Amino acid sequence: MQNSYDVAIVNFNGRNIIGKCLDSVYKSTILPRKVIIYDNGSRDGSAELLKKKYSQVDLIEGKTNIGFARGNNEALKRATSKFVFFINNDVVLDKNCAQALLAGFKDKKIVVLNPMIYRGWKIKKNQPVYAFGAVLDRCGFNYGLYDRGGDRNDLSCFSGAAFMARTGVIKEMKFEQRFFLYYEEPDLAVKIFKKGLQIGRVKRAECYHLESYSSPREIEGIAFRQFNSIQNKWYILGKYWPCLQLLGAFVVNGAHLLYIMYFMIKHLKLIYLKIFYLAPINMLTGLLHRGRTKTCDKAWFKRLDKAHPLKYLAIRQRVFAQK
Image (cartoon, rainbow, N blue to C red; front, side):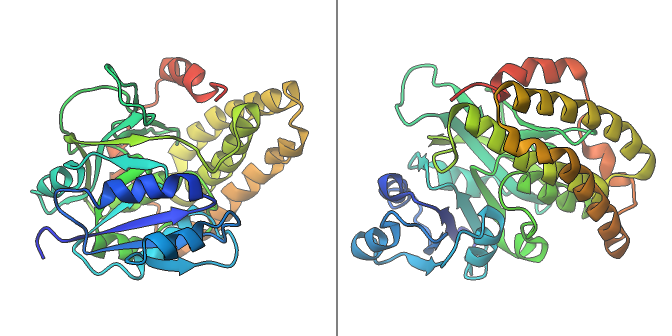
C-alpha cells in the first residue's frame, strides 16, 4: 500500500485527447490501482469511447457539466489508495512520472507534489515549461513557476494540471464546491498551510500539458479565464485573509479589476463586465463564511510569497497571451 495510488481525471468533451492521456497512464512504471474518470456530461462521445476501449476505467457519467472542483470531488469519493494523482485530460505522463512523485513523499508533512509540467505534447529540445509548482502571494495572485530548478518542499501553491496528493488529507479538505473553474489550487493551498502541512515539487517527475483544451481560445479564452478566476479569488480573499492584510489586497485587486474591465471593453467582451459587481459579492460571501470556519488566524499567511508589482508586470504578457 505504501506506493499505491489512484488516478483521478475530470473529462469534458475530451474524446480526441483522453485516449492519449490514458495510454500514458497505463505505460507508467508503477501502475495505478484504479483510474477514476468523472465525465462532465460530454456531448462528443467521450463516455462511449471510454466504455468501448478503456473498460477497466472506473467511469462516472455525469448528466451535466458540474465543473472541475465538483467533478474532482466526485472522483475523489472512489479513491481508496494512499495517494491520488489528479491529472487533466490533456496531460501525457512520462513513464517514470508517478514513480518519481511517490518517492518524493518522504516527509509526512508533504501533502501535494507537482511534477515538472512542460507545455505542449510535441516533445522537443528546450521544451517550454508550463508550470513547475506555483506561487500564491499575499495579494491573492496565483501564477505558475517557470524555472527549471530543483526539488522543493516550500512552495506557496501548486498547479492543478497534474499533482499527486495524500488521499486522506485531500478527502478531508475537498475542492471548493462553489468554484466551477479556476483557483481551486489556492483554496486548497490555504487549507494545507492552516494545518501546518507542505507543498512541493519533484524535477524527475515529468509530464506534458496541451493546456486549456476544454476552454475557449484566444481573446475569448482570456476573458473566460479572468472572469472565473477573479470571482473565485475575491471569495478566497474574503474567506481567509486576515483583516488588515485584506485591506491591502483589496486595493491591489481593485486596481486589477479596473484593468480587466478595460480589457473586456477594448475587446468587446461586454458580457463579462458583470465581474464589476460579482467580484465584490463573492468577497462579501467569503467574509460571511469566514466566521463559521474560524479563518482569522495569521500564522499561515506568512507561508505565502510577498507581493511584488514588478512580477505582475513580468507575467502579464504570459497571462494575456492570445492562444
